[in-house]
Length: 87
Image (cartoon, rainbow, N blue to C red; front, side, top):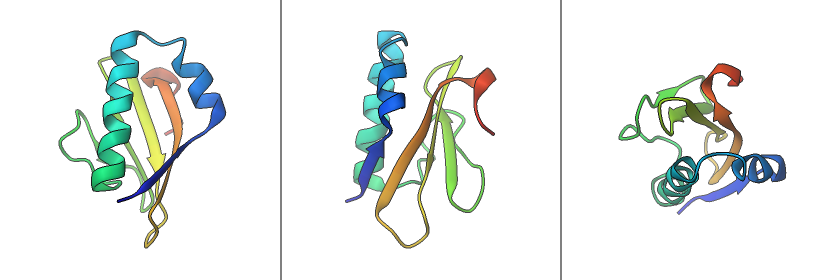
């Protein structure tokens, strides 16, 4: 079981997103807690570097997270439009 933290800014930004995207994000967080940072079943999932990952929550929205190797801490550092994603 992993521990997932979501930055306060991310939580505020989620309120501005469509309900469908928020629901998808909640499912992603549950999967991260249960299975860890590697989520190949998610749409357009990819490993961005040794410690960072991303997937699509819909056509226009993505989530990015990081997990240092060997830890159970996962930090979600971006949820929003894919055009503004930090990768």
